Picture 1 (cartoon, rainbow, N blue to C red):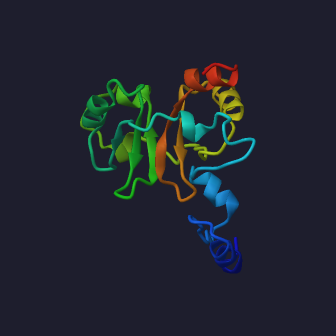
Picture 2 (spheres, rainbow, N blue to C red):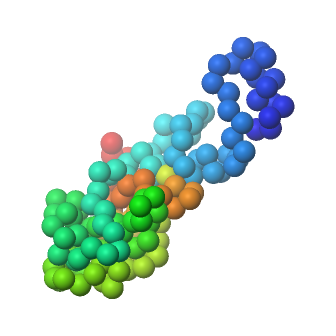
Amino acid sequence: MSPRAAWRLESLGFGQVYDYVSGKVDWLARGFPTEGRDAGKPTAGRLAQRDVATCALDETVRDAGERAQGSGGVCVVVNAERVVLGLLRERELAASDETRVSDAMRPGPSTFRPHVAIAEIADYLTKHDLASVPITSSDGRLVGVLFRDVAVHAAQGGS
């Protein structure tokens, strides 16, 4: 919305008005709240598990593996700003040795934005036989991880 429109809404008595310069698609991609007929539909951001294991490039696979236990067999490699750099799945974590995460990770994993419809992601995860996929904001920051079983269940109408 333009600054002029924001000021006009404020003059009409609307309280929480923001001039979000980046636009509607970026707003959606960041997983910010929405209203309207599609607001209640399941999306990646709503169903992603937010408390997931993360690790840094300079850690060992052993340390990452210990942290990933109970986290769905995945450790997301992030920098200090939580930007997703890579991914360690069960196969890489099984090594559980002194190898550096930077040498073992899958670099530049496919990610989805929080606003993507759950049916699209369920289809992607099934077609590519992936157990999970990172969900990131438009600037690449980790929102969480969406697991295939959760996505497929929701896409089939489960809650």
